[in-house]
Length: 409
Ligand code: MLT
Image: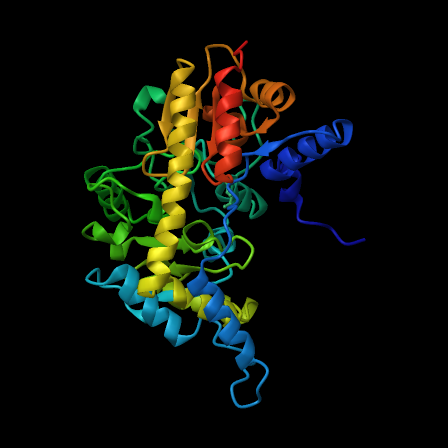
């Protein structure tokens, strides 16, 4: 009998969004005439923009002709997209096309990147947190068992709650890896340049590596909020950045993202010599990955054209209008709300004593609105609830109407 990876048994029963889907399916089965509005998982609802569709159509036609047909592509991504990204997203920040690794999405990259580190590397995550950061380290045996307090015993938690303005404090003991996501999923909050610089300085002083998830950077409106960690002096030596076309260009189904791994970011090998993570990531990707599809990379390239940018910006504006409406609805109920200003997520503080899964059930059963319970993102998410601005606008207006008459109890 083959012995399985024992660390999987340390994982909580279901992945958060799978558990929500299960409960929703159950509800729909027993309420066939439901008028459910789904504002739970941050999945987009608007179609791909015309510039992207045109690029897809052209690339598909190329596949029909032997002269332009493309087979295996470079595992790191085609030069046309790597160069476009380096210029469009990192001009003036010292990032080269060689530092960009195109993939089928940020979730896979972030889940996989921890593989480059030793099994005993110490890991800090903000709490609440996008579950992939925690679960991928659990699978690698780095997190230990789940304690009764809902925390994995081998991980360092950095609480982000209303009490600290959702700004994490530096870990008390040194850690090897720090996961940061800004604009934040799930709280929708941001860090200013000065606040992010604290983390870059920490990583430099402690020889740590920051995994910076910038999947929501396109939603930033405020001036002093960095779009990339490389806007912070010294970050190129300590930070890897992950970006995604999912939310910024509606690619949740199409799948494309990228990791930025500058050559100065390193760890220490068994001989105590420095090893560049870029070389390791390249080795890993060339071994385990055959690259994002050509047609998808052409579609991603179109996002950075003037028309693509304008069209995607209009869709982002629409989602942010949704988020503002949800925010106002909860404020109208007298609740405290974070997010929804520089991020598509609205993070609601529930009335004292109300637990987030009970609120999830109440909202589902009494208003037919699906949200995400804060506790699903970690123990410090208890007492909070997340709704997304990614809904269809008419349904979001309807959800807001339902919320106005919703009794919090
Ligand atoms: C979320 O709802 O947190 C996101 O959609 C999850 C993801 O991007 O994988």
